[in-house]
Amino acid sequence: MTDDLAGHYRAIINGLGENCDREGLQNTPQRAAKAMQFLTRGYQQNLNELVNNAVFESAMDEMVVIQDIELYSMCEHHVLPFIGKCHIAYLPQGKVLGLSKFARIVDMYARRLQIQENLTRQIAEAVESVTNAKGVAVVIEAQHMCMMMRGVEKQNSKMKTSMMLGQFRKSQATRLEFFNLISTNR
Image (cartoon, rainbow, N blue to C red; front, side, top):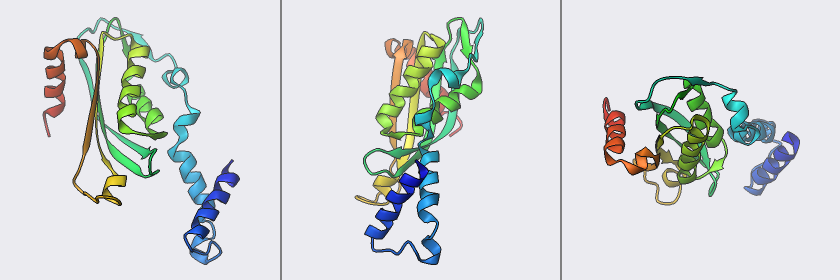
C-alpha cells in the first residue's frame, strides 16, 4: 500500500512540474506516503479495541470534564490540516472511562479525512456508547489550513462546533455549567 501511495505522490509532484529525481525530492513520494498513512491511521482503529475494557465502576455522578485535548485532522475537502482543541464532558451513570481513552477517541476520529462538524458528533456518540452516560458534551475549536493557506486566507479565524447529548441537550443549566468550566483559565 505504501508503494502505491508513493507512486501517486510521484505523479502529483511530477504533475506540478517538479522533477522527482532531483536530490531534494528523490525520497519525497515515499516519505509523503508514510506521512499520509500516519495522519489517517484512524481508519485502522476501532472503538472497542481502543477502549480495551477501560470502563470502571464508580459512584461519581457529577460532571467530568476533560479539557484542551489537542487534535490534528485533515479536511476531507482539500486534504489540508485543521488543528485545534477538543473539550469533552460527561455525566457518569455508574461507570467512568479511563482518562487517556478520551484523547485516544479524539485521535481515532480526527486521524481520518474529516470535517469538524462530523468529528464533533462522532466523538460525542463514541463517549456516550462506551460510558452509557446520562449526557455527553463535546466542543471543538480549530483553525483550518484550507481557510488560512488558500481561498480567503484568513489567519485568525477559528471554527467552533458543539454536540450535546442527553442531559446536556435537555438542561440549559447543565450546558451552562459545562461552558463555564471550559471557559475558565483562558
